[in-house]
Image: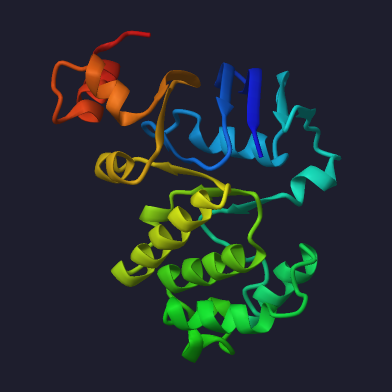
Length: 244
């Protein structure tokens, strides 16, 4: 599903979190939202999901204007925040079942798919435990299982590489995300880890003070950089030195 933002502005009192952002993301890409704390990464994700409404500007999905009441469009995406489940007193399996029911993704074959994913993320022994009893990384992996089982057209993830997942979970997420992008899914995730953005992105979207400072492939960004081996570090250094 094609994503387009046209002049999106979002403020919280005197803070301008997004400053007239315009952006087009084509299907089948893995896009990293990169920027310092408070840059606007999470606000951008919130506007894409309908959790927050832009003060000005529009968001389009497949050339259809997106509003918060467009549940048909919202059901085509999945947001995985820092803490993935609302019902922490319920078991991992029950939380996943509720997510799949919400997305009408609990049809034939869903149980087998969930069990395979729980096994892949080393969560099968924990499936009947309440979410509150899990570590942060285990809870996030359980959220990933729900995301993968629901298999929406757009994946939106807030700081997945700072979620406390173990190396096995991170590796599994990368493999599933790359395979999903090859099937036309769009994966958008926020991060502050430069190495991750360099190695696991088709496009890098650099945000600073609510504005898009760069949106391109790493190869093209490297062509414009003086330090070819440390492109993103150079860009961050330039942001720190800039007054705007």
